Image (cartoon, rainbow, N blue to C red; front, side):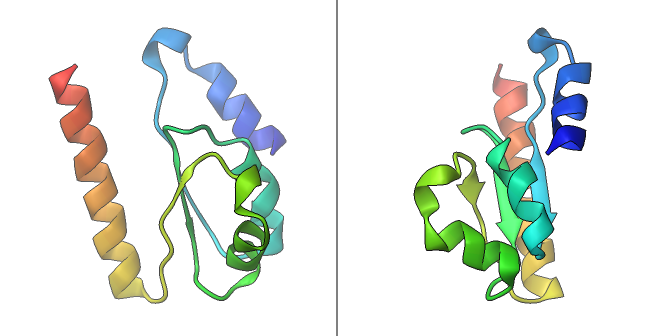
Length: 91
């Protein structure tokens, strides 16, 4: 979580970035809790991070997009990148 805090703090507030966090291990849960409601977390389905998130969904503010294999991961990730890019170009 501290590494994510450092990355978030390094960007000026006026240049706030959206984060897409991918993970599968239980060690990825703490950073997930640092994400905001405009961020995304992509846990691998049926792996420790996914289990932690869905055992009590209330603690995670980020939008959750689960994936099972590389093809799904690629499709979801590209969709999110395009979505974020489109939203930024409107602003």
